Image (tube, rainbow, N blue to C red; front, top):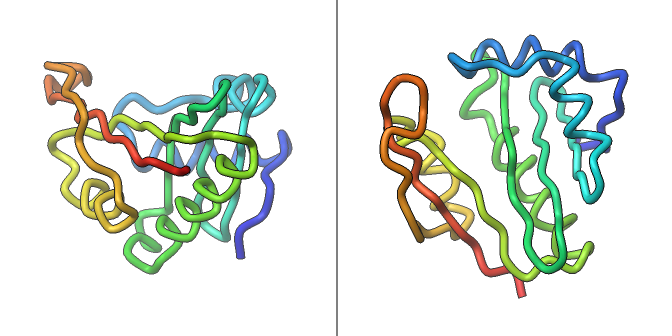
Amino acid sequence: MITTASERDCERFALLHAHGFAEAWDASALRALMVSPGAIALASADGFLIARVASDEAEILTVAVAPERRRDGQGGALLSAAIDAARAAGARRMFLDVSSQNAAAQALYARAGFTQVGRRARYYGDGSDALVLALTLA
């Protein structure tokens, strides 16, 4: 089940983020994103997604699922709920960055219909490129 996240979830989200990212965001950084204008913050049993909508564009800022629960559909459910929320908020296109080294995430986004529209060379701390993906929502 996907629910709207609240600031009370930030400590749990920070732990999940630390399991998924070398450059993890702490609870205060996640809280700042969640309360920013246009924020979409969603939670599942063992995962979360934060996105934001500005004008007619949406951007997925981060998605994290507990390592032991990956590939059980939570990431896809969070992504689907975020797409629906962005559409409802008036977004016509959604963007995200994903590491060129993260094949599992790339597959998740491809299943949802995202396509590559750009590349940021050596974007991440490990030197990997960021693939810029987009999905038309309208």
